[in-house]
Image (cartoon, rainbow, N blue to C red; front, side, top):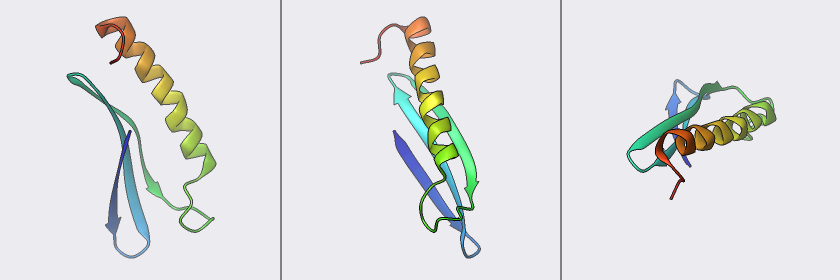
Length: 68
């Protein structure tokens, strides 16, 4: 997994989580980070990324075979 972070106008942060398989890139989640816990990413965002990771792995295996 890769996290791409972009700072914009002060404390606004945008992050894109991507997962790359052979010849395929899945964007798992994009959001504007507004965490009440300082720099920590919200638990709901982390859980959503994990759910989408499982879905991306399943999709890849169904359409392209086992991930390498």
